[in-house]
Length: 278
Image (tube, rainbow, N blue to C red; front, side):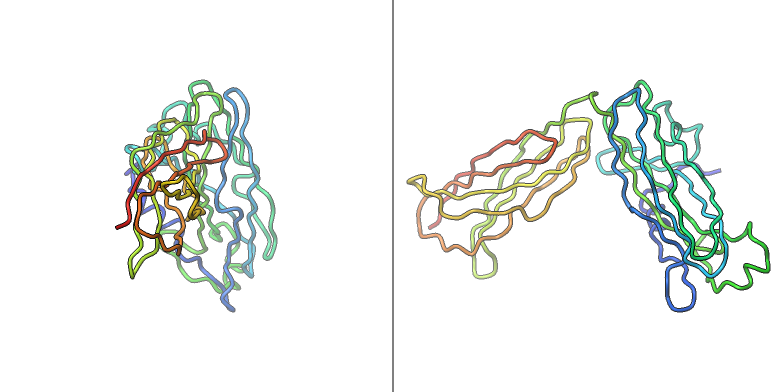
């Protein structure tokens, strides 16, 4: 049995278009699509997942956990084979209740996800939940009344993926290093903007963004920049954070762009980049 699969292949399966019945409605409802859990070692991390059967017939909801192991920054191997997993893996310490509920047509319910934070857990661990709608355990008479199409490798039904991140608190600190900053000068095709590269030096994933202000040679603020977007940065990974653009026209002279990197869980740091407009 092949235990490993490329991350992109599994994600394609998990997010592949769901089977639908007449009228174009999705047969399977799952919410939320992402679970971010944080708990101390020795405690229980838990969350609730809503699953709904939006088909015209009774169905079993199958929930299969898949461990995501980061083999290099941003590159994952995935497996559901317990023998391949270390003692501190998410799915080895996961309890799903109920794991395979049977729902009547149009019904929904909450499923409880519990993860025991065992000694040795450190930083952020990743997994996925493959949630599928399966009517193979339902009577043939009820299946015949449904209007399903086939989905890849899943038999009759639909499938959706839930991404899961579990962070063991108190085992490390959130931190990062600033690698490089760049000022993009305005031209006829682009506006003034800035970007800064940071490296996550901790064992945790965190979200970060960057704002900036440009000051002239007299230290007077000329323009300010809002974040372009908030980015999630995985442990050991480098990311480029961008400011939004500014339409300000800068006369010739010397300037400084003062970047401020911040996030809910990380220390705020500043970086000054000097530039000149000719």
